[in-house]
Image (cartoon, rainbow over all chains, first blue to last red; front, side, top):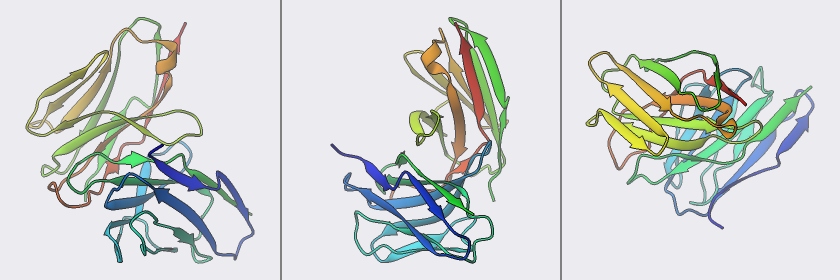
Amino acid sequence: DGGITQSPKYLFRKEGQNVTLSCEQNLNHDAMYWYRQDPGQGLRLIYYSQIVNDFQKGDIAEGYSVSREKKESFPLTVTSAQKNPTAFYLCASSKTSGLEQYFGPGTRLTVT
Amino acid sequence: GENVEQHPSTLSVQEGDSAVIKCTYSDSASNYFPWYKQELGKGPQLIIDIRSNVGEKKDQRIAVTLNKTAKHFSLHITETQPEDSAVYFCAASRGSVGSARQLTFGSGTQLTVLP
């Protein structure tokens, strides 16, 4: 089965802890993206990566970090510097030769 | 940067009727406009998209129209069914094939199809 997997589906952390969200794709897509979704709102771009070992900040990158060591993987770390980390996090990927972005099932992070 | 506004925020229709969701964008350089359907607790699913060189695109019961002059685009769903109930998002982006694109999303429309 080709697709994007995100794990875990639900994640709970205490305030002040860093947490890393996993995103893996086997679609052979070059570009990968991280979005944040808050209740009743649209998606906002956190980071994106066009190729391995390269990534760019999106609109709300503060308090987040990413790495892209492999084409298939684009993990997102939510650091303790992120003031409101509780949200639904969505990973997406696309071919750079195409326009369509395809999304994973998401990880719901709750920080208390 | 780009700003996308989406209306209405909620929409209820009777099964079999049509539903229309409208979006406006601010960046005249935007050239790609996808629509996504998101069911509760799931990731968004791409349902249809349109490029700026096309005025209308249709796929079975779903159609999208684009007015570049007015900078707005709309999603039309005909013969609605209960399984069409979901949150729908519009988005816009600029750029060329060969580069990663930053999508700017609208705030979403909760569509409810009443049986």
